[in-house]
Length: 589
View 1: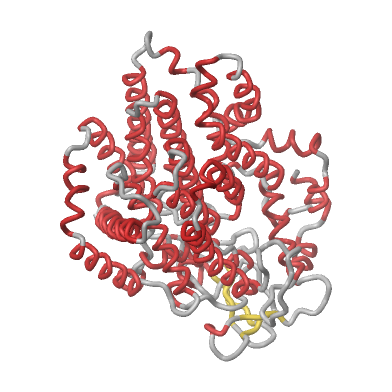
View 2: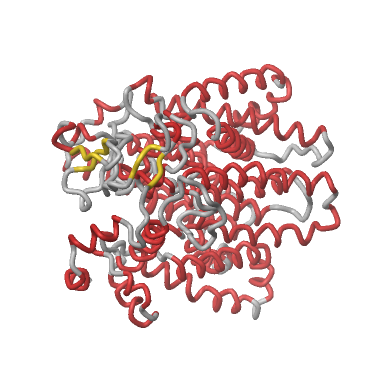
């Protein structure tokens, strides 16, 4: 129940901050006041402001429940200041469509049930949870990537999550962001299922189905994948509905684009969308409006880039090609290259990094693609990839029909950006979770154009609601059958506070971790069985790879880490080469 309380608190506070942001834009005559702005849009805007605040402050102080309390106090002040103006939204919420609200409440309960589970995302115990814990304990730590390379995978998601983790109060870390976003975006899509625009309606139903199939199993994990997927989908729908005028929705799109990029760099193709959106309204772009857009971009990107530099010594980690800084905490080049190569290697071959053979990354498409295709585990992956690949042909076919051409035009800009993102994803690191929003939108949008042609013969509303209900029933059935019955998950024990992600579920501290002393006398814990076992859980001074060259930059952990490595090859590459021979690497593939 604590999670539901946090969802409500987060929703209300973000709503109040989003409303304050909207009021400021109107008062400065940057946008025109409008009664068509949805409460969910204000919540999204407030969430973007929360990301800005937490990223900025993380450069100077730890981000923990103290910051959450300050955020809450500020929201209360806004609610008192604008009590009269906010009544309009309260009345609108009370008159919401009953069917939509009933379905949404059902979805929220399903998401809550899944959120009681202990996180099982592979990376959650490796670096997701430790990254959140570091943000709670310290401001951004120089050279943290020297301790463990993935702790330098800078995502604003971890910083925001640390403000809501409540570790010091509860003795375990909570992860409310993903569940909150899932419930919020479900409401956004549900409302659009009954849209007067039939194409948007069909597309919303399709997206709701795929997010339930793909993302529900990770909603209880502190992974940035869910936020990095849901926010671009919201951007695409806002874009489709946005009129060619500089409105609050336009500002929100800009805000969410930059937030998405700070969460996951794979979303960088979204920047192309800003050019598409700006062109039709170029005559409206006054100095104040341009300044606002640039200001939003700077407020989000500058702290994010600074965090990159502090964590790793590189502008963009793990991309060593942009090497502009000479700082004593810089992660050794060989280790940065290793992290970069492993992202692509895992995406193509899905083999543990202890068996990585970088020569395979040089293979031509004809050699690596069959391996990649064979190792797509989820049955939905292959058909949806094929739909995305052939989508340009489907879009082109709409030009030969007058009615379909009219319906495809509002989707054309978002589709081009989505397909560009799909190509970027496939050529760089084709792990499906890195490109979900681009794959889904590319695959579904062109086909959504066809279905409204059958609306006179089939009740599309009943069909869409029936599909959504079926997905909800399937999700509920899986939770009951697999988790409650087969795995005997004691949900009654975790209704108040979810099951924690902790090494204690595996064994004692001594059974799970072993101490190692670096050449400077620093004690680093590695998981027993590392590097095959990489779970650091909530332990801060932990790394699955022990680097004897690691040392503190000064006396305090908060002052950061550096490496004394001077040889051309890092200890990591030497260790892996010594432990796993090249013939064993190839044998695994």
